[in-house]
Length: 281
Ligand SMILES: NC(=O)c1ccc[n+]([C@@H]2O[C@H](COP(=O)([O-])OP(=O)(O)OC[C@H]3O[C@@H](n4cnc5c(N)ncnc54)[C@H](OP(=O)(O)O)[C@@H]3O)[C@@H](O)[C@H]2O)c1
Image 1 (cartoon, protein in one colour):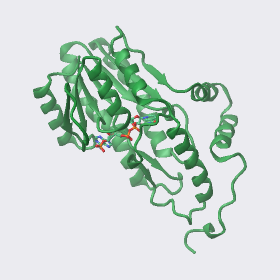
Image 2 (cartoon, helix red, strand yellow):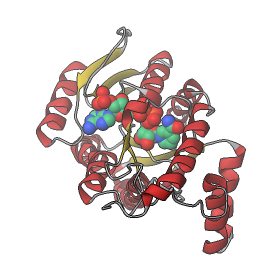
Image 3 (cartoon, protein in one colour):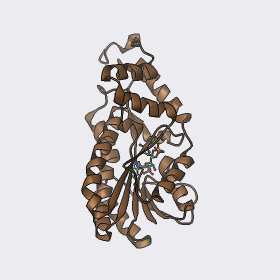
Image 4 (cartoon, rainbow, N blue to C red):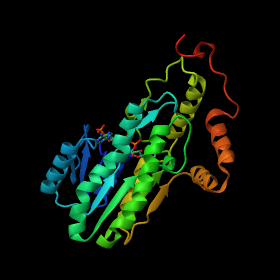
């Protein structure tokens, strides 16, 4: 299979690309910068998913190098940590541009090719955060929720053309690089949210460090692509994260928020530090 893959320079994208090559596929991986050794069967091309011309150039070069894609695997993504109040609109825009519109842009390039062939597979990396929100990850959560809704629409529209869509919903994996976890500029020590932000982000960091094996996820994606049909959703998460998603569906909203708040922030409101009484003095 010829597979184009975004976000192939790091984290789950890189591990998935490697496992796909091991499974015998030809992979053209795109990212803004690559490090480390080349791998036979894995082509690397520059790609910025937020840039129309750059994405088109990637598609043209990928066509020349490998040919039309049987599958597109979209892993490129970045994260912004910050309170809803203090994350600026341009910071939200940056996350949405990469995590949501980047996927839309890449899909619009491969859909005509796949439609013409009468078949194709589009795999998009969502997240457990595409299904539920957690404190201080609102931009990422919003982007992944957008991906979830968009993918449902896409799967229905392109079914007559033989194109299948699959959302990968990973829980925490110990793969992501901290260089893609941005902190909102407003999150200074003077923020009224500073104490809870510190608690919440420590839990987020701990969970990711202790997360699942990224190669195992890569192998699951390779296995998925060997199936006759793709599921619309494939959750790759620990039992407790699966339980969190199930409870989110079943429990009343306020109760669910209380449970998640307690997990990340420890229940009661943490007192803001004395110096955080208003950022302007
Ligand atoms: N790690 C986890 O626990 C976890 C959990 C749930 C979901 N996910 C999802 O899995 C995917 C990979 O995340 P990760 O944490 O494993 O990886 P990561 O280490 O954070 O890597 C992010 C990748 O995205 C690429 N990227 C960022 N901006 C880009 C842009 N504008 N154009 C092209 N590529 C871009 C980066 O490459 P360049 O900087 O070289 O461009 C890099 O290859 C993401 O969609 C993430 O939301 C991860």
